[in-house]
Every structure is written in structure tokens, then in C-alpha cells.
Amino acid sequence: MTGKFKIATTSLAGCFGCHMSLLDIDERILEVADVFEFDRSPLTDFEHCGSCDVGLIEGGVCNSENVHVLREFRKHCKILVSVGACAINGGLPSLRNFIPLEDCLKEVYLDGIGVENPQIPSDPELPLLLEQVRPIHEVVKVDYFLPGCPPSADVFWKFLSDVTAGREPALPYELVHYD
Ligand code: SF4
Image 1 (spheres, helix red, strand yellow):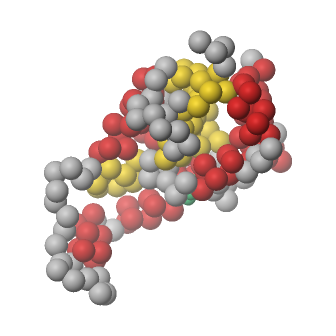
Image 2: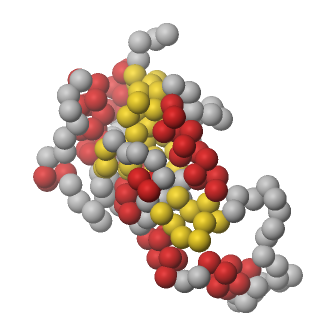
């Protein structure tokens, strides 16, 4: 036991841009490393999420594996945070919600320009796509939302600083944006 806050992060139907913005805190990441210990994250090699203080979720929910991972994070993280537009409202990937899933698959795998050997992938190891991309709060309870596409590095910094100081996390108006 190191006494550090444990933090886990994941990207569901995200683009990793929110993770890049987290890393954009630049040299302040050293201060984060002093206070936080990373559990499951694209930045580490852990396959499963252990007991954590904070879970940061990037991306909405677009397939069965996303649902599974999200539930694992909710089960193990005291504070679960919806990070970025995709997690908060489905984001740009949810534009596919206006087109039937079957039509999307046909366009990409059967009728798309340059497609050879057309077939829709059906290997049982592949996660099943959901009919629609959904925000994460429709699947699990969310404690905080960090808006932006992506949220700025200063948003991550303010949020994590509040958590480590034992303050109720709050974002000043000038840090809040949705683009
Ligand atoms: S919110 Fe924006 S930056 Fe974050 S995962 Fe979605 S598209 Fe990428």
C-alpha cells in the first residue's frame, strides 16, 4: 500500500483524444505521478480494473465489450467520471444513430469502394455492435462530467487537484466548453 490515490482510465468508443489532453498537462504529470498510482489504463499493462479512487471514462458505448468494461470500472471505482463529449452524450460517433446499423455494416463491408471479398465480420470473438451509440450514464451511474472534445488539460488538472485536496470538484466557468 503506497498511500497514493488510485486512478484508472479507459477509452470506450473514443478516439484517445481525451487521454492525449490528459497528458497535455505536461510537466504537471510528475505531480500527478507523485499523488496518483495508475491502475488499468491505456498507459499501463493491467488487464482489469482493481479497486480505485477515480475512474476516468473516455468515449461512449458502442458495443458489448464497452458495456462490460464500463460496468467493471463502475464496480471498482469510488468516483466515476464521464470524460469528454463522447462519454457525455455519445459525441460524433453517435451520428451513426441516424442510420440503421445494418445499413452502416453493408456500406462498410459489402458496398464500400475498394472492398474485396465482401462479408460482414461474424467471428464470435468480435464484440457485438449496439444498435446505437449511447452516453455512459445510460449504462451506469456517473459521479462527475468533464465536458469538451476534448476537455482541456486544465480541466483535468483542476478536477484531479480538487479530488486530491479533498474538495468537492468544481470547474470554473471559463474552463467549461463543449467543443
Ligand atoms: S470527446 Fe472528442 S477527444 Fe474525447 S474521445 Fe470523443 S472525439 Fe475524442
